[in-house]
Length: 204
Image 1 (cartoon, rainbow, N blue to C red):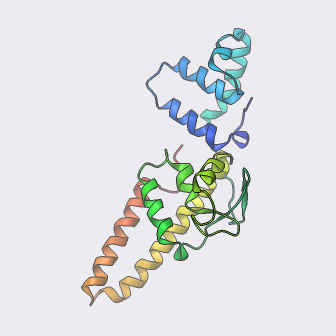
Image 2 (cartoon, one colour):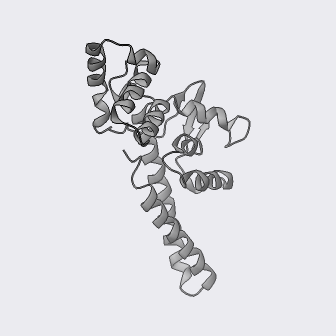
Image 3 (cartoon, rainbow, N blue to C red):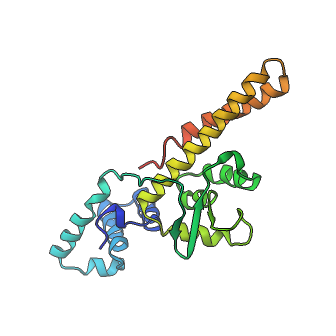
């Protein structure tokens, strides 16, 4: 049975997070969560001797603790069959990456695997070219929760840095150029949106 965050993959976390936000009795939620952590069916969990169930509930108590993010240095990570390269230079992201990011960020964190797939590209490939993005999204669910949190913080830090650089550049030429001023306002709105909806990483 999984009893620590280092062994908890993002896919299982997403299922558990969904359960925690459903209007059910707490004992029903606990049964479902133990089933996920122990790779059991809910029926099998309900058939456990009470002493065994209580012991498993204690092992699941780690979910109430804070999950420390893993350190991310931009090196490729293995996720399923893919070796994925994190996007570290956000001044070079493609329009497709940016559009998909804007789509998925609206429902963050429910769309975390999809959002991470925007900036995790298979080694030797260009974004959404020569591979199935849906397969990458499924593979991303295999990474650990600490990795997912670390990657989220890493990407949004880089994203904010690129926006700040754009703001600085535009501010220098915007004073006498109405069109540049409009661009600057749009970028500032993006900064506000990201800061409000994302913060430093994955909300726990």
